[in-house]
Image 1 (spheres, chains in turn cyan, blue):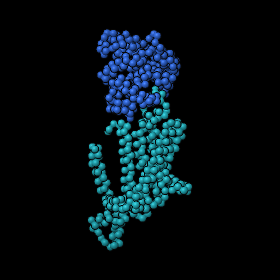
Image 2: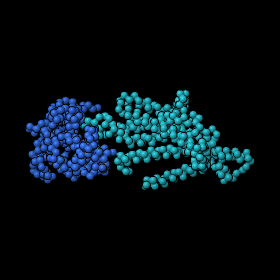
Image 3: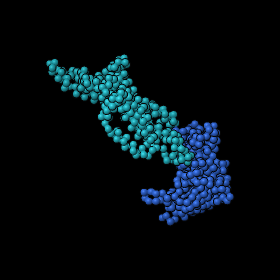
Image 4: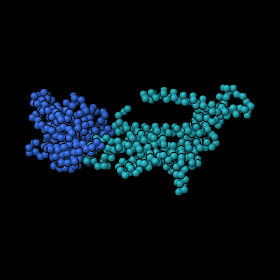
Length: 292
Length: 263
């Protein structure tokens, strides 16, 4: 894995830089509140004592990296995964609606793309609406979806998944329209000389040609799905999920909880994108792709 | 013209005008041509002379705007629907996600042949172009010359009597090109197919053809048709004979004549 080693040093040095900056800002941002506390307790701290205290507040303005790390570790590995404080449990709740929404979104995106590529009317009528749909702020739409669906008795996983679908179908549609149109003229001419039917051209040429585009757009879509699921948890007052953890942390000023929920969300996002990437590479290999 | 044999391709007063943003462009004008069965006809001329367009009209990839064209006694469209010809493009145009055997089998799949029949024909045509043993390889694992041979195999796989080749060896180096020319002649001799071959190489045209159609541009038209006096059996060193050089000189003159009013 040459590429892995090539990336390791630059990535870790950036990470180290970020951690250092993070500590600096944690001290700077937590100092005013710490001075306030000291004044009330009639204490005077030396500079090094002050730094120590700013990095160990229970509800800091900006938690220090090690506080987040400890909280993340405790809530991930030390709690039973059935506990609603477990990050694994909450991540699973969010993940399940992410995956459901992602599956719907990918399917919907592919169907719309097939329609757009094959029906000229759809190309002209649908595309502007699809683009417009993504300019609407999801935060405004999410509560409406949840309230409307709640009124007709649908709650829980489905409404959240629908918000994920709403965000994830778009990249898939755009990618697949491009992918299904990607065959060269020469390849299309070739199919024409064989008097191939539209269905044959579709299955034997357009679909295989679109596969790399599908996986590229699915990487974007899966990350968008996760955002959708988290956003979907905010207005529902959901009791579980990464979004619920973020909201609860904000209510009770549990800044460390917020940050570790954030880390959990990022880890899930990274894993999802990685899984899609690996799936894409396996499919490419199975389709005779040249090893990079 | 080849006397009594039935015409495989017959064009009469054929014209094709493209409408472009800069106004109409006459790609073909007044082309009269009859190609008999078993002929090897080369189309040669500078770029813009309509040689590729003519081939595409025969293949029903372009529609003529005037005149008539018939292929195997049918309209070009009917002939295409009956898969009357195999077409070889400038690039190999293999599907990168298919192995060589599945690329060659593509037209057979489309025609709905049985798996057994497909396998038998794939084997036969890969033998014909000397690619046996490369069935399971993907196109990127083959050299450019081998890829183009695979694409010729694909055009031969469904046994059409007419082979349309659009500068098939244009992108290859001269050594590979010589080799493929030799193999193509041998293949033509064995299969007795009718071949229409577009090129802009004079030696290639003279070496391969029984007839050379010289074309010139603006408007694209046939300016000369040269019958080759060379025998059907042609070793590579026939290219040094006076007979060969005389034909090449005639082709060159034809090209120059078509060009003379140009500048």
